[in-house]
Amino acid sequence: MMRGRVAYAGAIHEVTPQGAQIRLSDGRVREEHEVVWLAPFEPGTLFALGLNYAEHAKELQFSKQSEPLVFLKGPGSVIGHRGVTRRPADVAFMHYECELAVVIGQHARHVSREHAMQYVGGYMIANDYAIRDYLENYYRPNLRVKNRDGGTVLGPWFCDAGDIADVNALELRTYVNGELKQRGNTRDLVTGIPELIEYLSGFMTLSPGDIILTGTPEGVVNVNAGDEVVCEIDGLGRLVNTIVSDAEFGLA
Image 1 (tube, helix red, strand yellow):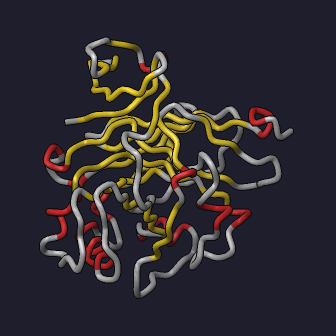
Image 2 (cartoon, rainbow, N blue to C red):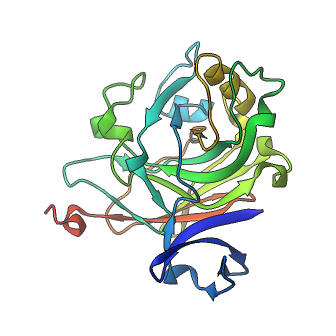
Image 3 (cartoon, helix red, strand yellow):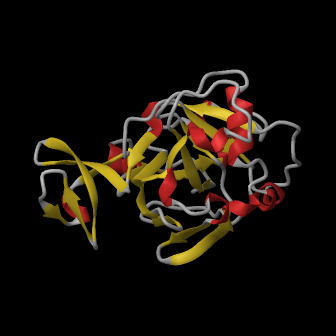
């Protein structure tokens, strides 16, 4: 089952797909653009993977490390489908990152990779923007790169894990202004989902609603104010986002 969350007419509603439209929990059917999209649920801890696709690591001239490159993200970084993300005027290289988001469904502690998928509740699309100008180094992404307000887009749908036949064979695509710029497949993850859950749960407890952003494939390009960025993952829909300037936030 796929479900999302929106604000409409002064209330928050759970929604489901209705063809090209959406159905609110009270039965009303609306167009996508008539509502304000939120993340499909209030996220718990957000774990983000850096350089977890071999070709993307090669693209950035980064060699594989002995452990996954994982960092945390604050909840203020999250926005929903059709939201806007600010590009600061002083940066030279800001890019999207289309990622499979893995949602933890039950408490997990000291979970082996053989049993890890039992702890997955479902999946979403994530677009986790990065500003390379602000990066300290590829080993330790800093706060300004990965915790900016509105820099992580989630949704539009949360899909139950059982509805995805093979999570290890999902194609990811990113379009900028309608032009295909990025393409990859989850089969190429350096550290797979079971290994990530084993690694993280080995030293901390994972809780329902925690999210693991599994990394992005090669093909990242600079985006500018006015660009529309669309991320797609097989079976999970399409996540739309627009880049805006400082002026939209009263900062120019």
